[in-house]
Length: 552
Image 1 (spheres, helix red, strand yellow):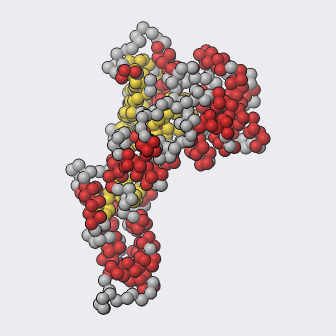
Image 2: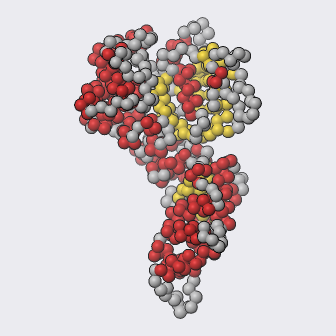
Image 3: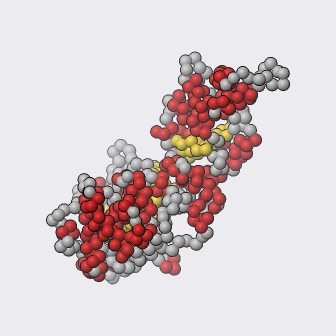
């Protein structure tokens, strides 16, 4: 019974939000967009071992604006999809108290229409939560510090605060498994702190991690993959997470770094269980928050390879393009704060063809992974514009990286896949195309996606055949003449005394390359007495910055 939808109203940084989930869902967005509030809501409502929560005064959302008062009510709804298409909704709500004291939450299970599913069973919600526990995994940030006096570290047994269902579940694991758990969890907490062990000190924890992975190999099996060819799966997920069963492979033959990644992963999961193992038959929801922030990239890459083996449904938050490339495109949710709440953007499954998925997988998700985090894409034909436009922005007092603008080359990928992806994720976009036949084709392709929007907001085309001829006509012919002269004497063409601009430009580009010439022109723009930034380029820069700041 997977969690299919979350509805949040009035909780912390979220005024209102509806979020649909997949088996694995990756949440991305800028600071204060609501990612952490989503995880907090899940943990408060459905956390492993938790009681029905109380909400403090800071949990009630405060709208923006001077003198705004907190909202009066928090509502959290979690819709679980049962077999047959029926929903069971776990509902948590609370009213703000007048004196600011903690507000007790009301928890109940209802159907899609709001009817109470178990009106005569006060323990129904707690039983439901034990079947669908939330585990919040914090890599490198253990929930409990390692201590020689702790029962887990000393091997004396589970902590005294463990619930009775947890004691029964742990007892069923057997003494050997309990010792392996304690060894792995203790080492994980120490390693996450200041402990920098000698390799000999890691031998026993690593062996315990491999042994525990072998014992858990059946428990940690992936759910069945959705049907589809290998080509479709590779297009949807351009960076694979590993072998068919990497946990079993790591347990059998893992190298030092692989075994350390296994130790960190299993230790983080055990730490999230907090001494009370998930009951047999439960369907956990695992929350993983920015794992890459506390790990070396090599170790993070190893852990990413194993994340897909964590049992149950997963919700990730990340700022890592590498991790995003290992998640299907349709499983990415981009959160954007707006006046009405938090908007959730995603590319629907099937919105792109298999070939389009392959193209964006290679050109964006693998080679320009950070572009997914941008506010606006400036679609340009090639490397020349990618070097030139950020410099033009700087000359007019703007900064593309600080504004969230990213130049994305489209010639190899095509317009349609990029625009579909940008529109799905709520990323603004603008096309700058050459004035030749190919450029006019790109402009027509972009216009087919406008849906009534003004052309000027999304499309700019040079009147000249390319950016070099535009710069020539904007007062920078001398830059190309000088570069061509440095390459040698220009031969006259067909006996004519006057050499055409195209021949001079071609000679300069052949001798020095397009990117270098673009940077030379940008340098000339900043020189005293220069014609300055061409009006068309300045207009493009201003448009994309406006789109990044305010949308359309």
